[in-house]
Length: 434
Ligand SMILES: NC(=O)c1ccc[n+]([C@@H]2O[C@H](COP(=O)([O-])OP(=O)(O)OC[C@H]3O[C@@H](n4cnc5c(N)ncnc54)[C@H](OP(=O)(O)O)[C@@H]3O)[C@@H](O)[C@H]2O)c1
Image (cartoon, rainbow, N blue to C red; front, side):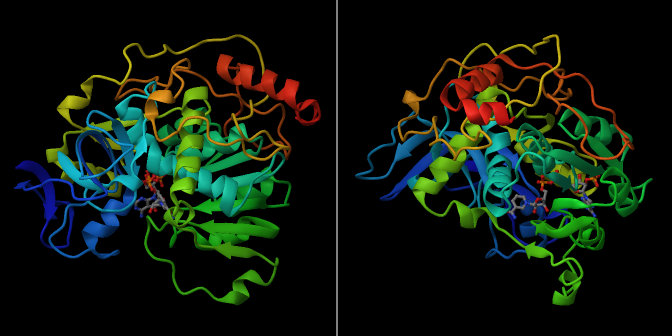
């Protein structure tokens, strides 16, 4: 028997009970994993409340990192002791141990610690899909990100910045505004004090933004549409504030707008897609494009506390549950925060230089032991602390003078600088185009 969070009746955070459950042994095609770190995501709230449905009783949770403790009969390519992560279905990660289909588990590169992997996979894959597949941003685009200091929002701003876009984020308070600025927002709108549409017009000289990534839903839909430039894309990928009211196609007519409602899991439906997207996320962690902001860690038994904080907008960055066995990282010494002098344009993320297609994933062969160990990818900030390292900034603002958060000089990072040099060697034209 192991302990798990169980939901017998839908409801508030108190609906989650800490109980003993039987896990059993893996069947054909399955593995059993002992979870070491478990990601908390807003979708867990949706399942707990019944907004999304799961048969009762159930164990919530859709993201975890763990160590394989048993493999099903005949399974090859996975062995006891492997460190794997998963994000998505099946629901049930809020447990000390769980059974998984082997094909949903991805190997965690040895140089990424369990915490970082658990904090990154679901949110990072969502960001990859949003920025690279749903609406493919390019250098020179202006993007608006709601909940910019949130779990997904924080990574979205960092990655969008690295791609050379002008990033505008909305947040509810000053503290989150500072975090969003550190995470690569060139402009931050505190929507409790400023009118979003008015500020967007000021910042963009009336042009509007190319794309809005909107995870807030009900409360932001109208402002999102009004903030778009002609032919702009509204990517509505969540509803933290509630389900959108029925949408009329005529809303899209005035500026010939595009509206899409993506689900990340539909973009990683095959094993190849999963490995490609997860590989790109881990590569960006290792190269320093993505820094994980771990501000909230809870024991699994206190899942109710985590959900209450998340729903009350008290959180920023990622939340996760840490189990005792995760205290030892996959590799010993994390890289300390770095401080480098000078200005630099935003470095391209490895594998997606602006004028060439994505490079195949470098990190996720089915045998994790083959993953490179050279670049350190540990979380650079301990739980409870904000990041200490500044983000790279683009060379100059492309739009009007109004700035709520002026950019600071941002130094290059060694791994990113190496990636730029590699790009310059392999694709001189692309490098010049930056
Ligand atoms: N479509 C997909 O495939 C996919 C995948 C992953 C996540 N998502 C969605 O992305 C969203 C973000 O997920 P996350 O886990 O990273 O959560 P999160 O953004 O860290 O947390 C939610 C944030 O939304 C903002 N918010 C605005 N109005 C809110 C309200 N009425 N109640 C609660 N929060 C409100 C708050 O930020 P402020 O205080 O700054 O307002 C809050 O901190 C969720 O809607 C989730 O469902 C979608």
